[in-house]
Length: 140
Image (cartoon, rainbow, N blue to C red; front, side, top):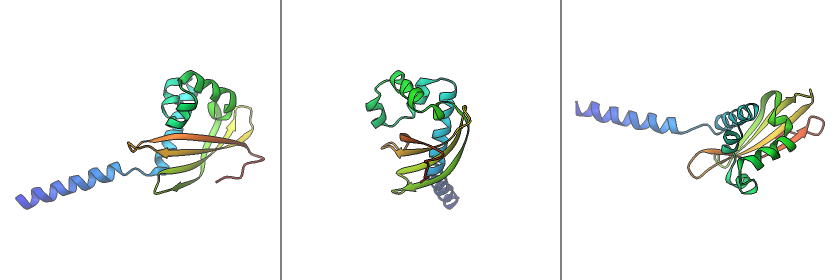
């Protein structure tokens, strides 16, 4: 009986560790989807919550961040359609580059390249986005 209890305990530890070991690319894609969803609902607070500390240092409140996104990142702010393209995780998943292919509401095609960084607490945050028109995009 005691051997069974020890084996059950060890299985629980293995499963708990596996559940915490998040795939960096999936985490990045989920984060991007959640932020785009927040933009589509004009939810500045939620959209801002996905920004990395470096972005928050540049835009110290949700309103200045949201104004910048509306002005400079219109295809991300309100995409018509989007799909994930290429991705690359480096540094054991500490940094993820994720390409997002966007058709804007103006029917123009764009490529957004997101840089997602793992934070000290293990969560992921958006550290920057580069937007390229389809004509100039090179991918990652």
